[in-house]
Image (cartoon, rainbow, N blue to C red; front, side, top):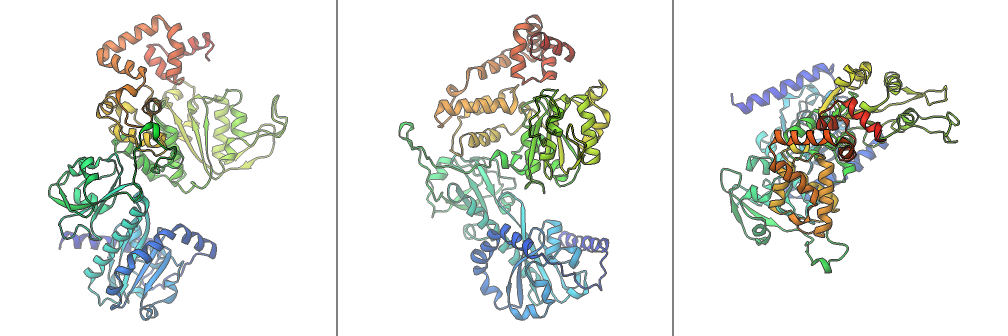
Length: 621
C-alpha cells in the first residue's frame, strides 16, 4: 500500500471515529440543519467576495468539463454552511434535496463523513468514495473537496465536486484542487494587484501561466507580502517576509524592469530551475523629488495595529512563532493568559491580536495599565462607582473598565503593580463573574476574557507576598513569553512592517548599513525605542531612503558603548556609575526604562526595595 493510500485510509478512519463520538449511526438519516434567515444573510455577506470570485472568475473556465458529466459543484463557508451550488438539476433530484438548499450545514456531526465536512476537519483536500460515507443514505455519490485559504492563509471556505461515481476519482480530485487554487489566486490578486508586483511561476516554460502556478506578491522594496501555497511548495520555503531577491536570486531593480510578456528563469532558494513572468502594479508608484512631491502620494494598505491578528505578528522569529502558536491554540477558549516580557516588547499589541483573532473580536478590547493609575483610584477605575461613592466622584457615577469589557476582552497591563486590596476584589469578580461598583449593593453579571501582562516574574512577587497566590493561579492559565527585541531573529522584517505603519503605507527603503546597525543594536527600550528611532528617521529622510545620517544621536551612543566595552566591563562600568551618582542618573534611568523597577534594580545592582526608596526620596514614587 502506498503512503498516499495509507494516508487516505487514516483520514477516513479518523472521520468515522469522530462520527461515532458524535453519536451517529450508519443507518441514521442525514440531519438537515439550516441557518435562520438572519444568520444566512450574515454568512452570505461575509463570503460575498468568495462567492462572486468562484462564480464569475473560476467556474466559467471549467463549465465545458462539467457540462458533460453528472456532477454538482458546491461552495461552503468556513463553518460548513452551503453558500451556493452549480450543476445539472437531474443530479440534484437523485439526492436528498434539502441537503443542497443554501444555508444547510455539511459538518460531520450532522451528515457524517463527507467531503465538505471532512475537508473542514482536516484542513486539507479529501476524496470520499461512495462506501466511505459514514451514513448509508449518502452512499449514492462520490465527492472530492478542498479547503480555500485567503491571502493571510486563513481558511475561508470549501469547494466540492460531487458526482455519480462514473467520473474517475483522480479526475475529480485534480479538478477540485485546480479550481481551489484558482479561487485562492483570484483572492490574492484582488487584494494586491493595484500597488504590488507579482511573480507567477512554475516548473516549465509551458505551464508557468497555468492556474496551478505559484504566485508571489512583493512590494516596491522587494518584500514578499503574500504567496499561494503552490509557491511555497515549489520553492521549498515559506516565502512571506523574505525579500524577492533572496527568493529568485534576481535583483529587485532587474525584476521591476523585466518586460511583462517575456519569460524569465531563476533558481534562487529552490534546488531546480523555475520559469515565470512578472506582473507590474496596476497603479504605478512614482517617486517624485521631495520638493515637488504631492501630498497624496501612492500608498499601500498596511494592516492597522488596531486590527492585527496573531498571524500578522508572525514575521519569522522562532520565539514569537511559539507564542503565537500557543495563543492560537486557546484563542477561543476561556483560558486566561499571562503575557510576560520586558517593557516595550509589544505585550499590549499581542493582547489586541489575541482579541482580534478570537470570537470576541466584534466586542470591546479594554486595556488597563495598573501601574499608570494611582493606587487609590485603581479600585474605582476597575469596578466603577455610583454617584457620591467618594469625595471627588463624578455626579454621574462610572461604569468601570470591567463592565466596559463585557462580552469582549480585558487586558490588565502591569498587573504586578496592582494593590493587594484590589487583587482580592478582582479575584472575586473572576470567580463569580459579577461586579459590584463602589458605593452600590447591586451586582452586575459580566462575561469577558481576561489577559494579564507584566514585566515582572509573578512567581517571585507571590513569594515576596506582593501578589496573591490565589489570584495568580486564577489568572495564570497559560503564560506566553515575548522575546526582547535584541533576541529576535526577524528585525529586518519588523523594521519594514513598522516603517509601513508609521509612514501610512508610503514605501520607504532602508540602506543595508542601517539594517546591519539595527540587527547589532541591543535595544534596551525594545520595540518602543525602535518605533521612536524610525519616527525620527522618517522625518529626517522626508520618507525617502533611510541612511545613517537620518538616525538620532542617542541611537549611536548605545551602539558605541556596546561596541567598545566587553559585556562584563560594560556592566561593571554601568553599575559603578549608577551606584556612585544615582541621584543624577536615576531620573533618566527611570524615564528610559518606562519605570521598570526590576530593570532599574538589575542595572543599578541594588534591590527593588532600594530602588523604591531612592525614587520616593526624589519624589518619583
